[in-house]
Amino acid sequence: MADDVTTPEETVVDTTGAASAHPALAAVAATVPSAVFDVVLGDPVARVEREDYLALFEALEDEGFEAFSDLCVVDYLHREIGRFDVVVNLLSHQHKVRLRVLCAVPGNDPTLPSLSGVYPGANFYEREGYDLLGVTFTDHPDLTRIMLPEDWEGHPLRKDESVGSVPVQFKGSNKVE
Image (cartoon, rainbow, N blue to C red; front, side):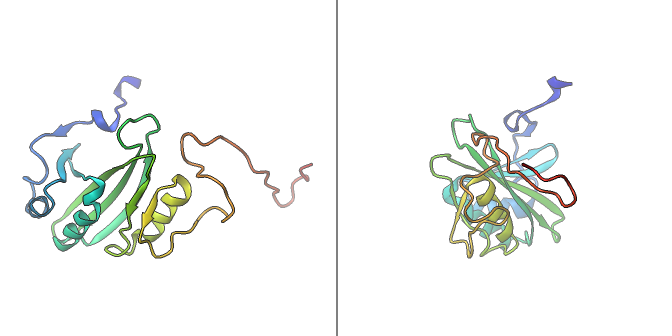
């Protein structure tokens, strides 16, 4: 079964593009022409460059993608172009379509504009991406650590971060010496 595992670059892609399959996505593609729309495993997917990231989401919100679902950061340590992928999932209830948006972020400058001005629900997801993987979301209203103490050094979910441990004393257990 190991042969069935695919990387994001190897997934089945409809080369006709999702923009031609849905009128709302076609309107967004006309507004942000640098965005590349595809259908991957039956779902529309958009890939956008960092420079047009915020403009794409503003256009999507204008076209009826009103529901922010989630945001996550993926670390591809050895990928040459864009170490990180920021993946955002949106829903449009009026168009009955779900959209996944990917944006590659370089490891030497891991910054993206914040979506919290367009989609307020992105606030805590961006803080998590910053805290655990070190992607900085510019113009974020409160980009502080959300899961780790403020004095924590590094970003523990990066693939080049060393594996360490913090001793934890559980109530009722023997004392750790």
